[in-house]
Amino acid sequence: MEKISIAIDGPASSGKSTVAKILAKKLHYIYCDTGAMYRALTYLAIQKNVDFENENGLVDLCLTHTISFKQTEKEQLVFIDGNEVTEEIRQPNVTNAVSIVAKHASVREKMVELQQTIGRLGGVVMDGRDIGTAVLPDAEVKIFLVASVEERAERRYKENQEKGIKTDFTTLKKEIEHRDYLDSTREVSPLKQAKDAVKIDTTGMNIEEVVKAIEEVITVKS
Ligand code: CDP
Ligand code: CDP
Image 1 (tube, rainbow, N blue to C red):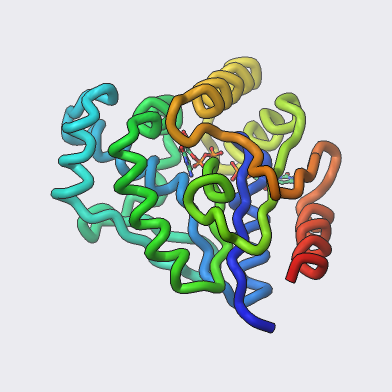
Image 2 (cartoon, rainbow, N blue to C red):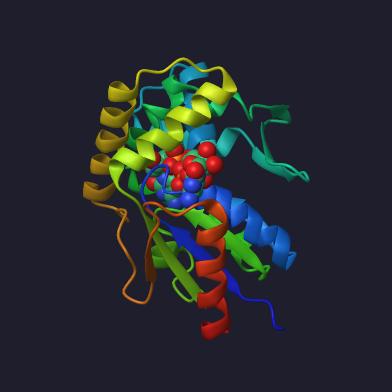
Protein backbone atom coordinates (compact mmCIF):
# COMPACT_ATOMS: atom_id res chain seq x y z
CA MET A 1 0.00 0.00 0.00
CA GLU A 2 1.27 3.49 -0.85
CA LYS A 3 2.38 5.54 2.17
CA ILE A 4 -0.12 8.19 3.20
CA SER A 5 -0.20 11.01 5.75
CA ILE A 6 -2.45 10.73 8.78
CA ALA A 7 -3.40 13.88 10.72
CA ILE A 8 -4.80 13.52 14.23
CA ASP A 9 -6.12 16.61 15.98
CA GLY A 10 -8.20 17.21 19.08
CA PRO A 11 -8.29 18.82 22.51
CA ALA A 12 -5.98 18.03 25.45
CA SER A 13 -5.96 14.42 26.64
CA SER A 14 -8.30 13.16 23.94
CA GLY A 15 -5.84 10.32 23.30
CA LYS A 16 -4.06 11.71 20.22
CA SER A 17 -0.47 10.80 21.05
CA THR A 18 -1.33 7.37 22.46
CA VAL A 19 -3.22 6.22 19.38
CA ALA A 20 -0.90 8.04 16.93
CA LYS A 21 2.07 6.14 18.38
CA ILE A 22 0.29 2.78 18.11
CA LEU A 23 -0.81 3.45 14.53
CA ALA A 24 2.67 4.60 13.47
CA LYS A 25 4.18 1.43 14.91
CA LYS A 26 1.63 -0.82 13.21
CA LEU A 27 2.06 0.90 9.84
CA HIS A 28 5.86 1.37 10.15
CA TYR A 29 5.30 5.12 9.77
CA ILE A 30 7.06 8.07 11.38
CA TYR A 31 5.29 9.46 14.46
CA CYS A 32 5.45 13.22 14.95
CA ASP A 33 4.19 14.79 18.19
CA THR A 34 3.89 18.48 17.29
CA GLY A 35 2.80 19.43 20.83
CA ALA A 36 6.25 18.36 22.02
CA MET A 37 7.78 21.09 19.80
CA TYR A 38 5.69 23.84 21.40
CA ARG A 39 6.41 22.32 24.81
CA ALA A 40 10.18 22.28 24.15
CA LEU A 41 10.11 25.95 23.13
CA THR A 42 8.11 26.81 26.27
CA TYR A 43 10.63 24.96 28.42
CA LEU A 44 13.44 26.85 26.72
CA ALA A 45 11.66 30.19 27.33
CA ILE A 46 11.42 29.34 31.04
CA GLN A 47 15.12 28.41 31.17
CA LYS A 48 16.21 31.56 29.32
CA ASN A 49 13.79 33.90 31.09
CA VAL A 50 12.02 34.91 27.88
CA ASP A 51 8.52 36.27 28.53
CA PHE A 52 5.75 34.10 27.00
CA GLU A 53 4.27 37.23 25.41
CA ASN A 54 7.61 38.24 23.81
CA GLU A 55 7.02 36.95 20.27
CA ASN A 56 10.38 38.15 18.85
CA GLY A 57 12.25 36.74 21.82
CA LEU A 58 10.57 33.35 21.30
CA VAL A 59 11.41 33.35 17.59
CA ASP A 60 15.02 34.16 18.47
CA LEU A 61 15.05 31.07 20.68
CA CYS A 62 13.87 28.99 17.69
CA LEU A 63 16.70 30.42 15.58
CA THR A 64 19.46 30.02 18.13
CA HIS A 65 18.60 26.59 19.57
CA THR A 66 17.89 23.21 18.05
CA ILE A 67 14.87 21.14 19.02
CA SER A 68 15.20 17.53 17.89
CA PHE A 69 13.56 14.14 18.37
CA LYS A 70 14.58 10.54 18.55
CA GLN A 71 12.10 7.72 18.19
CA THR A 72 12.61 4.71 20.44
CA GLU A 73 10.52 1.53 20.69
CA LYS A 74 8.63 3.04 23.63
CA GLU A 75 8.48 6.79 23.15
CA GLN A 76 9.62 9.89 21.33
CA LEU A 77 12.60 11.45 23.09
CA VAL A 78 12.90 15.24 22.91
CA PHE A 79 16.20 17.15 22.93
CA ILE A 80 17.19 20.81 23.09
CA ASP A 81 20.70 21.40 21.73
CA GLY A 82 21.39 17.70 22.20
CA ASN A 83 20.25 17.58 25.86
CA GLU A 84 17.29 15.34 26.61
CA VAL A 85 14.22 17.15 28.00
CA THR A 86 11.54 14.48 27.42
CA GLU A 87 10.32 14.51 31.03
CA GLU A 88 10.88 18.20 31.74
CA ILE A 89 8.53 19.33 28.95
CA ARG A 90 5.60 17.44 30.58
CA GLN A 91 5.89 19.27 33.91
CA PRO A 92 2.93 21.46 34.99
CA ASN A 93 4.90 24.74 34.63
CA VAL A 94 5.34 23.98 30.91
CA THR A 95 1.81 22.60 30.42
CA ASN A 96 0.24 25.71 31.93
CA ALA A 97 2.24 28.14 29.73
CA VAL A 98 2.43 26.35 26.41
CA SER A 99 -0.82 27.73 24.96
CA ILE A 100 0.46 31.29 25.42
CA VAL A 101 3.69 30.51 23.57
CA ALA A 102 1.76 28.66 20.84
CA LYS A 103 -0.58 31.56 20.05
CA HIS A 104 2.08 33.70 18.29
CA ALA A 105 1.94 33.77 14.48
CA SER A 106 5.71 33.81 13.88
CA VAL A 107 6.33 31.06 16.43
CA ARG A 108 3.78 28.88 14.64
CA GLU A 109 5.36 29.70 11.28
CA LYS A 110 8.71 28.30 12.48
CA MET A 111 7.11 25.19 13.99
CA VAL A 112 4.91 24.50 10.95
CA GLU A 113 7.99 24.77 8.66
CA LEU A 114 9.69 22.05 10.69
CA GLN A 115 6.53 19.89 10.81
CA GLN A 116 5.98 20.17 7.04
CA THR A 117 9.58 19.09 6.43
CA ILE A 118 8.84 15.93 8.39
CA GLY A 119 5.45 15.58 6.66
CA ARG A 120 7.04 15.68 3.20
CA LEU A 121 8.83 12.42 3.96
CA GLY A 122 5.41 10.73 3.66
CA GLY A 123 4.30 7.79 5.78
CA VAL A 124 3.70 9.97 8.82
CA VAL A 125 1.21 10.02 11.68
CA MET A 126 1.23 13.58 13.06
CA ASP A 127 -0.79 14.76 16.04
CA GLY A 128 -1.56 18.26 17.28
CA ARG A 129 -4.20 20.96 17.01
CA ASP A 130 -3.85 22.30 13.44
CA ILE A 131 -2.46 19.35 11.51
CA GLY A 132 -5.53 18.74 9.34
CA THR A 133 -6.27 22.45 8.90
CA ALA A 134 -2.81 24.03 8.46
CA VAL A 135 0.21 21.71 8.64
CA LEU A 136 -0.91 18.85 6.37
CA PRO A 137 -4.03 20.18 4.62
CA ASP A 138 -3.65 17.47 1.95
CA ALA A 139 -3.38 14.55 4.39
CA GLU A 140 -5.25 11.54 3.05
CA VAL A 141 -6.69 10.71 6.47
CA LYS A 142 -7.76 13.35 9.00
CA ILE A 143 -9.11 12.41 12.41
CA PHE A 144 -10.59 14.73 15.03
CA LEU A 145 -10.59 13.02 18.42
CA VAL A 146 -12.85 14.29 21.17
CA ALA A 147 -14.06 13.08 24.59
CA SER A 148 -15.96 14.68 27.47
CA VAL A 149 -13.80 16.97 29.58
CA GLU A 150 -14.64 14.84 32.64
CA GLU A 151 -13.19 11.73 31.00
CA ARG A 152 -10.17 13.58 29.60
CA ALA A 153 -9.36 14.94 33.06
CA GLU A 154 -9.77 11.43 34.54
CA ARG A 155 -7.36 10.00 31.95
CA ARG A 156 -4.73 12.66 32.67
CA TYR A 157 -5.26 12.28 36.43
CA LYS A 158 -4.62 8.53 36.23
CA GLU A 159 -1.57 9.10 34.03
CA ASN A 160 -0.14 11.59 36.53
CA GLN A 161 -0.78 9.19 39.41
CA GLU A 162 1.08 6.43 37.56
CA LYS A 163 4.00 8.80 36.96
CA GLY A 164 4.00 9.88 40.62
CA ILE A 165 2.99 13.47 39.72
CA LYS A 166 0.68 14.85 42.43
CA THR A 167 -2.39 16.62 41.03
CA ASP A 168 -5.80 17.67 42.24
CA PHE A 169 -8.59 16.42 39.94
CA THR A 170 -10.66 19.65 40.01
CA THR A 171 -7.61 21.82 39.28
CA LEU A 172 -6.52 19.48 36.47
CA LYS A 173 -9.98 19.63 34.88
CA LYS A 174 -10.01 23.45 35.07
CA GLU A 175 -6.53 23.62 33.52
CA ILE A 176 -7.59 21.36 30.65
CA GLU A 177 -10.70 23.48 30.04
CA HIS A 178 -8.64 26.67 30.10
CA ARG A 179 -6.03 25.29 27.68
CA ASP A 180 -8.79 24.09 25.31
CA TYR A 181 -10.32 27.56 25.48
CA LEU A 182 -7.02 29.30 24.64
CA ASP A 183 -6.23 26.80 21.86
CA SER A 184 -9.67 27.08 20.23
CA THR A 185 -9.99 30.86 20.42
CA ARG A 186 -6.53 32.02 19.30
CA GLU A 187 -6.39 33.93 16.02
CA VAL A 188 -3.81 31.81 14.23
CA SER A 189 -4.65 28.20 13.38
CA PRO A 190 -6.99 27.55 16.29
CA LEU A 191 -7.97 24.06 17.35
CA LYS A 192 -10.78 23.27 14.91
CA GLN A 193 -12.06 20.23 13.07
CA ALA A 194 -10.99 20.28 9.41
CA LYS A 195 -13.96 20.11 7.03
CA ASP A 196 -12.79 16.76 5.68
CA ALA A 197 -11.83 15.25 9.06
CA VAL A 198 -13.67 12.33 10.62
CA LYS A 199 -14.73 13.10 14.18
CA ILE A 200 -14.52 10.27 16.70
CA ASP A 201 -16.05 10.77 20.14
CA THR A 202 -13.90 8.53 22.31
CA THR A 203 -15.87 9.01 25.55
CA GLY A 204 -16.21 5.53 27.01
CA MET A 205 -13.87 4.00 24.42
CA ASN A 206 -10.64 2.30 25.37
CA ILE A 207 -7.41 2.77 23.41
CA GLU A 208 -7.83 -0.42 21.33
CA GLU A 209 -11.34 0.63 20.30
CA VAL A 210 -10.12 4.05 19.17
CA VAL A 211 -7.25 2.53 17.18
CA LYS A 212 -9.70 0.15 15.50
CA ALA A 213 -12.06 3.01 14.62
CA ILE A 214 -9.21 4.95 12.99
CA GLU A 215 -8.01 1.85 11.12
CA GLU A 216 -11.49 1.56 9.66
CA VAL A 217 -11.29 5.17 8.41
CA ILE A 218 -7.84 4.47 6.92
CA THR A 219 -9.20 1.42 5.06
CA VAL A 220 -12.06 3.42 3.58
CA LYS A 221 -9.99 6.50 2.65
CA SER A 222 -6.88 4.87 1.20
O1 CDP B 1 -0.76 16.21 25.09
P1 CDP B 1 -1.51 17.45 25.42
O2 CDP B 1 -2.90 17.41 24.91
O3 CDP B 1 -1.42 17.88 26.83
O4 CDP B 1 -0.87 18.67 24.63
P2 CDP B 1 0.20 18.66 23.50
O5 CDP B 1 -0.28 17.95 22.30
O6 CDP B 1 1.50 18.27 24.10
O7 CDP B 1 0.23 20.20 23.13
C1 CDP B 1 0.59 21.19 24.06
C2 CDP B 1 0.10 22.55 23.58
O8 CDP B 1 0.83 22.90 22.41
C3 CDP B 1 -1.36 22.65 23.19
O9 CDP B 1 -2.22 22.90 24.30
C4 CDP B 1 -1.33 23.83 22.21
O10 CDP B 1 -1.33 25.07 22.90
C5 CDP B 1 0.02 23.67 21.54
N1 CDP B 1 -0.07 23.00 20.23
C6 CDP B 1 -0.47 23.76 19.15
O11 CDP B 1 -0.79 24.93 19.30
N2 CDP B 1 -0.47 23.21 17.91
C7 CDP B 1 -0.12 21.93 17.72
N3 CDP B 1 -0.10 21.44 16.48
C8 CDP B 1 0.24 21.13 18.81
C9 CDP B 1 0.23 21.68 20.07
O1 CDP C 1 -2.13 13.32 23.24
P1 CDP C 1 -3.35 13.66 24.04
O2 CDP C 1 -3.14 14.78 25.00
O3 CDP C 1 -4.56 13.88 23.18
O4 CDP C 1 -3.73 12.41 24.93
P2 CDP C 1 -2.81 11.16 25.38
O5 CDP C 1 -1.61 11.70 26.08
O6 CDP C 1 -2.62 10.24 24.24
O7 CDP C 1 -3.78 10.44 26.40
C1 CDP C 1 -3.97 10.91 27.72
C2 CDP C 1 -4.14 9.71 28.63
O8 CDP C 1 -5.39 9.08 28.35
C3 CDP C 1 -3.06 8.64 28.46
O9 CDP C 1 -2.68 8.20 29.75
C4 CDP C 1 -3.77 7.52 27.72
O10 CDP C 1 -3.27 6.25 28.05
C5 CDP C 1 -5.21 7.67 28.17
N1 CDP C 1 -6.23 7.24 27.20
C6 CDP C 1 -7.27 6.42 27.61
O11 CDP C 1 -7.29 6.02 28.77
N2 CDP C 1 -8.24 6.03 26.74
C7 CDP C 1 -8.25 6.44 25.48
N3 CDP C 1 -9.22 6.07 24.65
C8 CDP C 1 -7.21 7.29 25.04
C9 CDP C 1 -6.22 7.68 25.93
